[in-house]
Image (cartoon, rainbow, N blue to C red; front, side, top):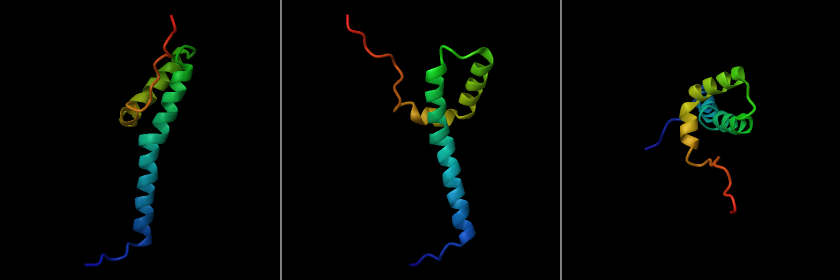
Length: 78
């Protein structure tokens, strides 16, 4: 059984879906989480509102990355 060759427009559409899906689920949420980590204590109210709004929009990607990112403080020596 052989599959028919895909047309160029179909391949371009699949590539566009893959790129947009990667941006939505991996790249933008990772950048957002690292930026939020750096600016957590210094962000103003408007910036914080925007960041949490973006966190809401990209929540599926943040949920996907959360098991792999550890932002807990380092352990203190007593």
